[in-house]
Image (cartoon, rainbow, N blue to C red; front, side):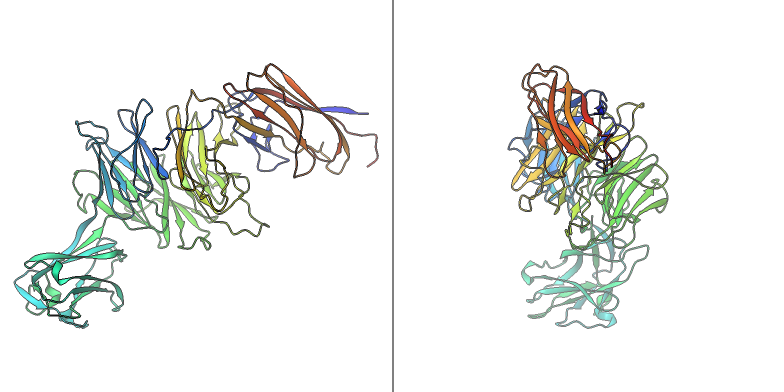
Length: 626
């Protein structure tokens, strides 16, 4: 007999992409374990606890901390929540309208600005700086004037059908996109409803809107608001559009014009929505230099917040940067002296997504973006900057970039769907990465049709310069499962750290919550560790497994440690659980193996177990012929 032993007493290499090979001191899988704080003393991480009770009623997607220390969160449905410095949740009355993953606080105005699909909503008196209680106002900034012209010296009489001749069309060249409405001066209304029809230069109908005769006001500008703001080609490469005004039935209405019977000289103004409604629904906001930068589909909208009232087009530059058509911004982060803007090529279909993304860099002053990184692997989501490095999630992997080529850091377990016959759809929201104790935390995924991937907060980094950067599965939410079952609509909405408090928001079916981790948290109730598969460097050689020993500090009350192993891919065999005060547990195996995976499960209540060593004793059967 040639008895040998394998001792594993450091896990600082983290979870490997491969279950048999990785960087030194790596392992195949762990859950809820801290393997970085003290590499030779494996501990449980502090657990997540649902902190929001029944207060939160939809998926929270963004949060900020105000100067007083109070925190404010928003949900997708427009709900606003405050979290006091004493840790009390409250939901404010009112609604912002459906939000779009962004918010920013202006201390001079004491106002939080929140984009929704097309407009900006506000929370005034947000931090009670001037003795004003928080007040929610939906759609505070809706539209601003773009083009205008004409007088009311004469009139034009509406016709009952469209005529494409010069005196029956009102042309304009937009400077902003999209078109929200058009206002026309009504001299005298008739009995017929009035229809405004928008055409492009080829006379294609882009939109129509009707105002009833009863709703018209004589001697005033009347507004025709398009049901959905119309995407137009605006400056600097603008197209020319025109409108017609007709009354399909009843008597005619007269419109104020400069020249009699000439609609092209009508007294009018066009109005543009503050934001477009992107397919991905994302309008994250980043404060950069003296601007609020708002993701806006294939634009970067830049607002220099000078006035508190509705900003002019000078302050509110809808398309300060224009990205290629078909691309939409997913997320933004400040990297060195640049704003990094991640974009995906987006389809309206969830089953036919493009495999194309880009990250643009802008210094805040140049006319256009300064440079771009192509990311042909797919959509770059949740971009985040930490320690002078950009990190993001894309195609089921964590990526990093610090000036050369993007580097794939780690494939998240069960995201590689080759040979599974599964066509999966996965999206990660903008505010899904944060930093805690110098470690990057990444929530993944926000939403997916993949029923195998674990919804969790994954980690990457190192606590000490002497050790390598490593990856692991760190936190799970308090939802009843961490898997999308196909019917529970499981989602993670936001991961955000403030000081010693980590917040994780989630949805499971019609249940919503925000979990918290802080320095006073108890350890997770359970977790596990699986070592890399062991072959003694020869998978084809039979060997004899003798014994597995797990060593630890004296177990605190309420803790258990259970050794386990498997020699097939499917099933672990478990041993007897060690209990309080014990310092090791042995498991006799006595089975043949070509490859074996060792591990242990643990449980805890108030105090974490501390595992120091896993030792495997085996006979290499070297005396046997191959």
